[in-house]
Structure formats: C-alpha cells, structure tokens
Length: 183
Image (tube, rainbow, N blue to C red):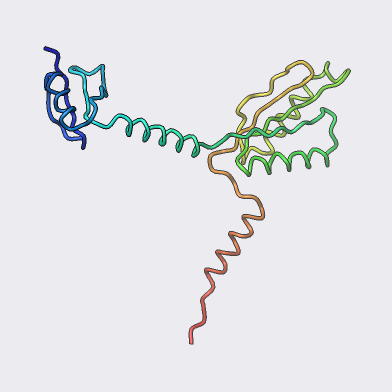
C-alpha cells in the first residue's frame, strides 16, 4: 500500500496515510491533493485548492520580477591621447554614473598607429580605476578586443555620496544640532 505524509489545508500535519484515504479526504473537503515533495520518504502531499495555489504563485513570481533591480551598464569612450581636461570631464561622468549605482564600461578606442601601443590604453584605464577607486572596483580587468580595450567598473556596495549630497547632509546635521529657542 503506497502511503503519503499528509498536510492539511491550513498547514497542520495530518500524519502518514494511505493514498486512497488522502484522496477521499480531499474529495470530502472539496480540495485537491497536491504532491509537494516527491523526493521525501514518504512523499509529502497537501490538501489545497490547486487553482488558487497556481494563481498566488504566479502573483508572487510577477511581484518578484517587478521588484528586481535592473542593472544598467553605462559606457564611456576614451582615446589613448586625451587632454587632461577632457580626462577630468570623462572621469566626472564615470563618477556620476557610479554614484547613481550604475556599472560603467570604459572603452579605449585605438586608431591607426595607436594600435601598436596598447600599453598607453592600459595605463589610462589603470589611472581611471585608481582615480575612482573609492567609489568602485574593477569588475572586468582591461581586455584588448580588436581596436578597442575595455574595462568594467562596478559601484561599491556602500555608494559614496556626491558632493551636493554631502553638503545637504551636513546642512541637515548642523540644523538639527542648533538649539531651538523656547519662550
């Protein structure tokens, strides 16, 4: 006689019963007998409304998909011969993207004779990684791919605040620290 461990509709343990008895109990309660854990010995079955169970599990799956955070990869393109001010501007963009919690793919584009000097691009990527080291870590180290060299930076778990956010937080702290006059 095959037996199953039966769980009631409210989650209470009924015990180990024969399959025929479990099916009879399900019919009497106008519920379905659903196998929950087939690998267990004896298999675990539960009395439940299967249509309602399917609907609720679909709702949970939809809700979890909605709550998942989409990872956005921003891209910043550079050239090996970049002026200092242009570099600072591009570094500012990378810092802003990382501050917003996005990953950043930094691409160095080589043209013509620049392709014979990949170490220039590598040094530039290393310098950028060091400059934004407090905000991010190197997720994918620099790799040459044809005419391009790429590196991926990911924000640290604890995202540093931008200067504007730091100033606003400091102003709030100072306002909270000031004693309020009472009459």
